[in-house]
Image (cartoon, rainbow, N blue to C red; front, side):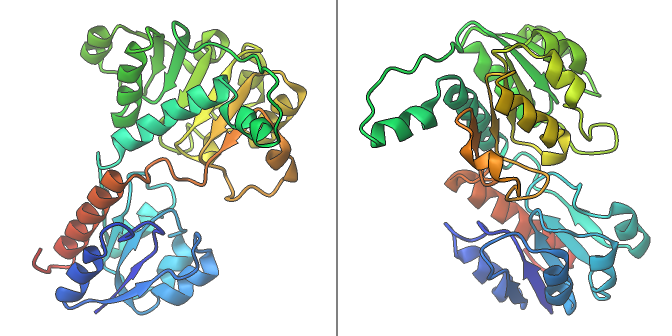
Length: 309
């Protein structure tokens, strides 16, 4: 029985995860490209497989059609927007997630991006490497207002971290937990108010028809000139053309982006801006989170293929 493993970080710190798959009698096909697979590569590699441990590579109807034997998809993460769930349901393909495995890692990275963008850390570092020791004035984080769009497992952890910075927190979520909000002193607000009032805005919601381009040109235009936008969720949540225009014009302070609609982004202007910190979709890539995601994904795949754990 063959299975495909696509995530770049799977098994990197714990090669024993591959041994577990092999010991279960599985022949493992690896992603050897060092990057995210495109549709053509996915169709070729997945054709003989009955299972897949999947990263952010496409699992659309065309890819599924190329995999007639496929029975189980173990998502290495929580976002399912790259999977055609309707097609999976129609075929009886089981889909699982590694819920909670990377929440703290992503929350840490989101806060790192807030701090890094606010204090111009990457820009100052580059200047210093050029032997330029001039002072760079940046903006404060402590005591400011944070907006969290998506108060799920990761958003909650970001909100908790904000308490250590004595931040006022506004948040929105499609399923509101009033008890948690009261306990953490969080104010409920819609995306419009968050974009208008908050000094820092961080995205932690799923990508779907309701949230696609939730940060659009209008909402970007309403942000403070000192606002910082952070996205560690999905690139499709942001109108990237509108954001890029605002950053180039200096209409907001900056952005920390670990995700893009197309990765890596194609517009060369992203690479020359000093008010952006970019990440390679790596917010969940800590040793602890990678190991836990890998273990959970293997457990889920073996279970859904009817093999012993």
